[in-house]
Amino acid sequence: MTMAGGEVPLGRAFDEPATQFLVAMAGLPASGKSTIAELLAARLGTTVVSVDPIEAAILAAGIDADQPTGLAAYLVAQTIAGQALEAGRSIVVDAVNAVEPARLAWRDLAERTGARLRVIEVQCLDEALHAERLAKRSSALEALARDRAVEQSIAEYSEWRGPCAELPRITLDTSQPLGRNVELAADFLSS
Image 1 (tube, rainbow, N blue to C red):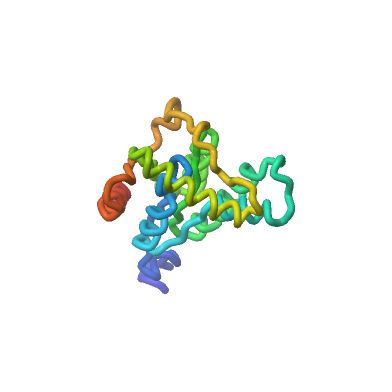
Image 2 (image 1 turned 120 degrees about the horizontal axis):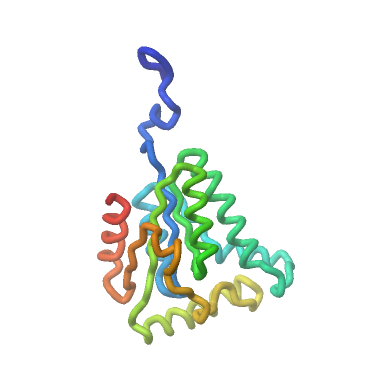
């Protein structure tokens, strides 16, 4: 498509937004990240890249669980997200992002690709509900990963300190209504 004086960038030719989002979900396993990620991605018309199925596939391929399969899954997710962002598409990443290096990797990817980073941290403040969700999730992931746990630890979730505390972030409580949380997340993206 051309205009007087030159070409229109491909993204603009199809009325795509000029800035894409890198939405990084964060929170304990079974807190409700995946549900919010899927609904938010549907609203954005984009894709979710989820670390858990990637790690489950690595384990199903026969890679020993004592290998750094979690790190490998994060690197695969970062590669896929990077390709989408470089193509001008927004992406939602569904991962625990329990520690600062994982969180800062998304910051660095957003900087490299010119994407707007938004972190959506998800908590379930109702401990009984969270325990129930974790028990259901464990059964499903065990079957998927040949009885090997994927991202099940709730003990190793670091506080948001240092540089990662400065990332643009909203925290949602999934013991509250799902629709309200999705609205809050969508509003956060538009701010």
